[in-house]
Image 1 (cartoon, one colour):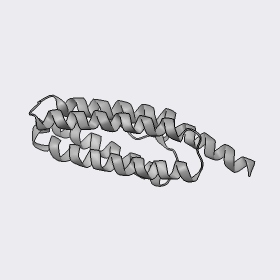
Image 2 (tube, one colour):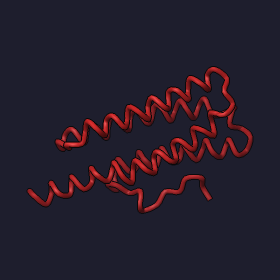
Image 3 (cartoon, one colour):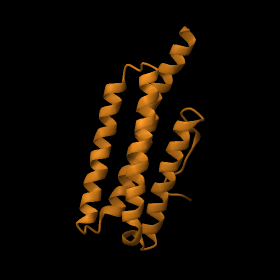
Length: 136
């Protein structure tokens, strides 16, 4: 069983956002697997770099979609994105400085944050888009 299981409760759009979220979940699982096999330090820098890069790309795509839809919660959503990006960068900095606890902290942080963010914040966007579609 994977560390972070993808399920129907995480589905947002059955499209690009879900594909991005699935990729992030896969990266979290990759990191956790390596860590649980004692290889965390060998792979953490590489996985962390990919996670940070992909997370930033995903946030940019998501925010562009929100802007295009005139989503009123964009500013608050963007702030949540900036906060997690700062946390990821802080972990990357700690890892680069030689911390040996970063891999497990990164796995937990991303699993918990993604799970809550998708189920709460991203669902707000879905509700807005559905209401907008019904109104038009």
